[in-house]
Length: 221
Image (cartoon, rainbow, N blue to C red):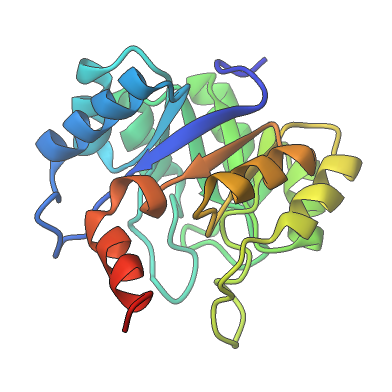
């Protein structure tokens, strides 16, 4: 059973190193604002941010740890990376759930099994397509997210989210499916839930003021 209800909103509180909001303090404040507005969980990157957010909010944290190769397995690529955010206070851990090889030599199933056995937390697999979603579930993932859809192929990243993938996975997997990736409007959030998503993770559209500002400026460029 997940520590947050169905048909709900998870807010991703992350900032790149070049952002003025980068760092545990600003991310903790962002998470607190999201909690007050009705978010049911926070997705956060790295042990420092996870620890600060855990002190600031009463919500469960989906921890990730971006320590891998940006051109390969990047999101929580190893068991050690998962352990860092779990120890920092993550209630769940999300990791790359694609079929690409992992840098520590473990298979996805071995990594998930070790997280279950050693830390007793649920694992969310961030996948890039239907086959990866099936494989991640068969490897023991407790929930599957569409986070990496559109980001691992040779072509440009699409503008719209992959609602079709949400629907296909929700109809097949028998576990909660989380919609994530390019959900930029309330209408798209609703579309994900109507397609069968257990919840949706919204990041840039809520917690990235720079990207929000640029969207408005592009409208009149």
